Length: 169
Image (cartoon, one colour):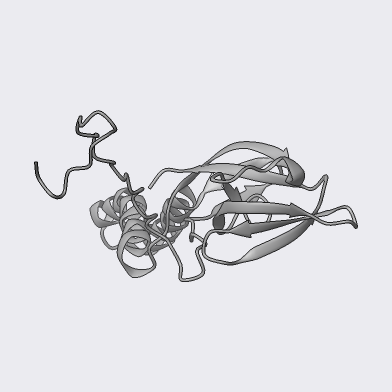
């Protein structure tokens, strides 16, 4: 029998343990938190930074087109059409290569004392970096200390609403 194969009491080979490693998040920082792409919060509506960047480039394209329309109307029209895709491409370059960041989807909100290990939560409200909950400890003063993978931690009141998210990449 092979030296590396483990057997049970009856001499049957045990199946090898398979360790499944989760892929690391694209925006993973040294402290264990994950940089996210960001959102613009308008009241209760969240606007993706991707859409916001394309919108800003559209406005700039319109301004440039107004300046060009008398000299070259075709170029002015092309500028308006090309500006939003250029803004999106720049946004994509930044979040994938220059300052890697992960996209998230909001899943729900829970009170801080109901957090469980392994879930991803927004560290600073509804937007910003997220952290994977490693453990929680309740204090005597009505507060919960949430420890994140990587060693960082936050202390919140027991009834503090925490946004739970899912990482898209």
